[in-house]
Image (cartoon, rainbow, N blue to C red; front, side):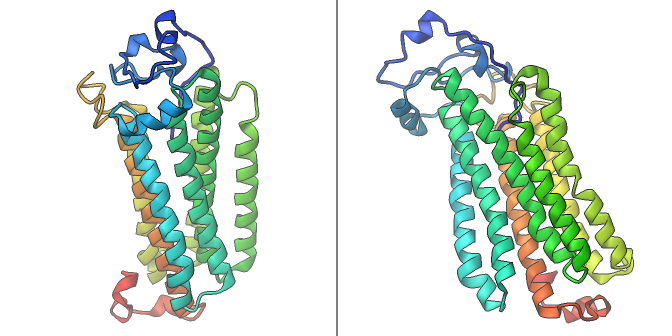
Length: 316
């Protein structure tokens, strides 16, 4: 997963080209790789370049500066697929869930899986060629959009469970947001370095969209006086804090900015970004499963008057 400041510049040195047909996975220093692969000068070595598709797959088992980026989201993909099966075959049926519960949680986890898969493939195949690099970068960015937009579907559905008009309005907003964010990516300049700040603004806008519905939901239920708000608003805050942490590591290139060349293979900012994203996705899925159970148990009754001691531990 890469928000990226990548451009379309080309720098395929003859030295690197001579190794395209190599039967081994070679690792290079930062200044030996083509410009389209450069993005973080503080990660000084461990780069793959100009590998065939076969060698890209082989590089899965070679320690490089992309290994954790690839495997974190490959494992994430498998984990969210497991959650998809567990939700649909176990959690939803045992809580007497409806078809709508199956749909919203399936869309959530499908968005996460697409995001994980495109990200892993981008980091795996980006070293093949500039054309393949930009193909997978565009899919990676599309995956980020779909993952973020998927977060809103069950959240809106359960938050406005008892306010169906607002539920419909905000779900339509999520659909429009998804379409607009994907449409932006068809612009010919979207992947260029000139649009780096616009890309960042786009994804920040996708994240910020949730603040409005969250505040509206809290006000509809009576603000902090509502037990439901006190129960679930902290979960929303934790989700945003995880996102801020991920973006902070990514944007400020922490910790390699302060230790150039010391965390090339393990511990660089992009790896922390990946781990925080997986953790944030898991936290959001868990929070929505808890909200699903809460809504299915109490529906639209006077659940706001319940004391915390009356709730099962799973809601706390």
